[in-house]
Length: 466
Image 1 (cartoon, rainbow, N blue to C red):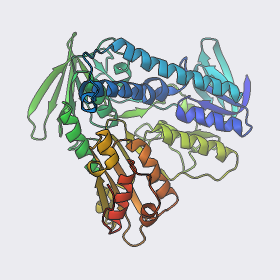
Image 2: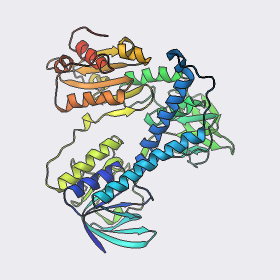
Image 3: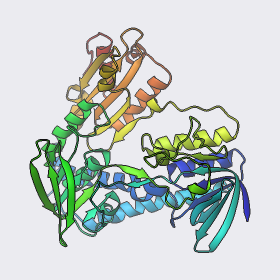
Image 4: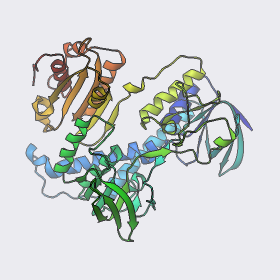
């Protein structure tokens, strides 16, 4: 039996950050992961491999459709699907190897196996080396989530698949039907559409990326349609069938009209659900709500004072960086520090091209709650930098309190939005006003100037630059 100060269950972004921070604070730490590699969903079958393929397919699409305008003429462009996926795997391997290095550097014990609580203070780990008992003064559950499905639809991982299987396909599909127009759905649509797959998105809501500002979703829909992606909104999918060499999906529109589509694959992208199976939570005082999420307080502590839970398994925004912040929060809480997370200041990003990024309140939220605001929008088409790079799609929008100039929300669809949103996060975190933001100097020409102009407009002044 081994004794530790902190035992972390799960090695995704929340888990490995929690383990590293705990070790940095001087605690004897163990991290337990059931799979052979560290990194969890994000590193192995989520964020990292998806972004690798998004970048590869973006280059391919640019070579096909954009290079000629720059005077770069290519006689023939060929896609090596196997090499594209090989590079994706190499990126993943480099990241997982980096995590192994960090575990060793910080003297964190790594156990491969499935952890199960015997009681509030003891876990049993079952792995290749048999079973071993681990006792720790504090536990951090960071087991993440797995893809959800719709009632009546079974994910068989053959023709009815998730993003996990899509990242390991052996050949380019000719057609793909994606159920769900959220972040995962539109990113997968971008990847496959760029390489010539005929992609159809079926979305239940009346707009894409429904958790973000609706203006972003409407703009993204127009862009994706121009790229050849077929999008059907207000569709209720109720059945999917594996036909052997293809799959068929059945759905109804808002008027109840029955429809069906057939494709090489049906990809389920309707969200994710917490992964708690086999954890033995029933042997502890830890409470789970009716949606399967572990209940925690503002410090991510469960009903058992020595057991914490972070990341996707506790709900909220299912984002790697949100889990990372919670990992640090818990480690420092155990250490007696008084850290706090402002959840409304955690950004969301969609890595299509152009990218989509958002932080703070949406315009819909402010209207619904009758909160006064001023809106300032500036298009990328009016940006000298965007014109120079031929990335003129999209806009930057800021929402500002009319009395004090407090920044209530920042929403961007455009080139490098994922990087630009950090400015909005800083402004919100440190309560910088819109006037402060437009009076600082911005390098010219840059994409960031779209935000400066949006701050000016939201403050009642006109744009001053292009």
